[in-house]
Length: 433
Image (tube, one colour):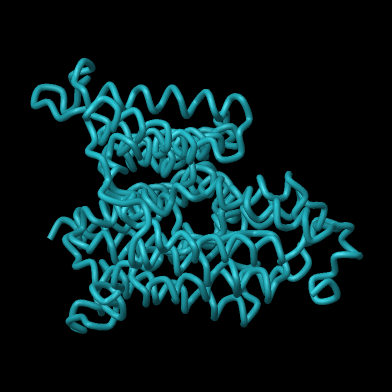
């Protein structure tokens, strides 16, 4: 084991790697409860999604540890699950089974572009500003969902939205949870979001807002309601512009989220040499494989988690850290009864905090260049306002070539971007039909 993972070369030990694996798990364990709650809004079985989430995280993280030997964990991604539920299924009216097929196909395409070594071409084709804008827009979208679930923001006919009843019990619980979670994060607790959910749940039980769970440990929920449903579909609904845009969006967000996370965590661990990431293809292959596996199990896109940086900070340097994290996700399968106490008010603070973290990419956009600022701003603002990540990305990709052309910088736009211009333009035409 020591020789396989290279403990000596990496200057680490079993104990250090184990502590790092536990730290990473605690930092991202919130997804076990947040993901089922989000996907349940589409009509998916919450218990089955819980099992699919834990298994996808365990298998994806295991592949990352064994194949790529990186201390990086994977799980169904925040933002991608919101896009799956609220934009694709509820917004576009696509059946969740068909949406799972879209996730599966995005994973297959990801595998192909990794094996064929054309990922660099795609990375270079899309301008950095649009990548940052997409990340920030998804952050605002997730935060908006959190505010809505908390009851802080509610529908209002005159102004579309307004402030909710801040004295209502559930809303007060969510506000309390947000404050507690922020305190944990400010104090530097690696599992701050997860700890915040625990404290909020306990507070909800103590005040009677949340009922006491019947048990803490129970049988693993059946995977049957979601397993293989990605292929139990009406195949005539597959060959449409609408689903093509969905697949491209899944691919786009996962591809750049993964690339950014891998580079950031690897750089923190000291793996990056001469601006190059060793074993990058293996890491990307692990991620893309996990996406397709997760879709078969019954969950939205599985991707690398930035929370892995907490494990690296705790000393994790090899894939053994990922093995430990994967093992803990398998153990977590027996704690599904706790889903009963993790309500929307409990998960709302987690969504808001994740939104804050993702919005940090706003600082990397050059707002002084108007031809850049306009498509970036439209990408960001339309995601929460139209309740659609796909619409935000599509609008930004349509506007970018236009502003660059009339600025006299058309030659700087990659041909792939011009191709995507027509794809997303067709998407808007399709929406109006």
